[in-house]
Length: 362
Image 1 (cartoon, rainbow, N blue to C red):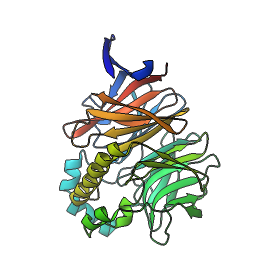
Image 2 (image 1 turned 45 degrees about the horizontal axis):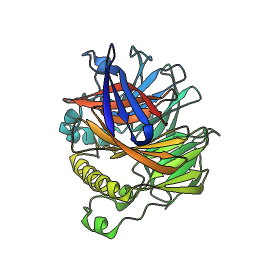
Image 3 (image 1 turned 30 degrees about the vertical axis):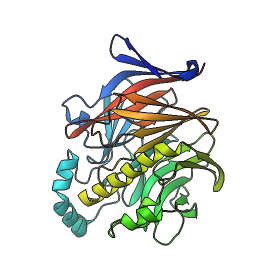
Image 4 (image 1 turned 180 degrees about the horizontal axis):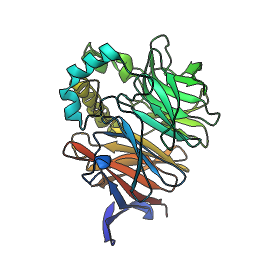
């Protein structure tokens, strides 16, 4: 693999030439979060979505809000009502005793956000996964519905073609990991098994951590066009593909690479667990699908600035090749126009970059 650097008017373009004449082009177009204005200060970017107009929705879990920007990075409005609105992970962790006291005395109201984890865009609405509920907002910050999540420790949220809400997580009265709700918040059914934890990892796991929490997928990707759910096994390099509640395919990747991903991911989770509610935990691998390609981004978690990652490329669900990318941050989302959104850490805050991403086969 050979890297070629081209200079554009605004940013540096990186072209990674692969074996066989294939190449990957990465060109940063805009950055959000480098200004000092309050609307541009992010405590922890946990998710990003883009609508048909190119408007960008950035979920900040620490500041407990979603910031809406246009496609050129101009701030438009804030969605959500924060419970605490701390400025950084450091500030959040410093106030854990205060947070626990407030939650014990007053709880979380149905319209408040307290450490929201994921967002999903569908039907001109924004679905927000919070600690104890799902909030559904219009794109102009009107709260449409609040759906309580009872006895579920949720980590993921998607909306399928039938507008059913898919929640991924540990449900106390169920041995399944995917839970399907209708638009009114009524649980219809659950499916999918926990992943098997290797005995060597289970033996080293601190007793404070429920083993089921690390037996959930590292990462999931939902393709709304095909109604397929891709789930990444935390313990071996396999991706299970579900259509509806049926397991239709198991995709496998290079075993050797995943051993490092597994070790760093579990270690990172445990360290952040002790720091407070796993705040700041970042999955070591990210699934992104575009047309017939599935990209698995593996991030070097030991580098605090996320300055490098490796991409495993699958075509028609079969592994093809890998490429290492430098200096682009942590990949978090790809929109329908092929822009790759990455987060970078700058001191106590985070920056989002929008990058043109082109993978071309010879």
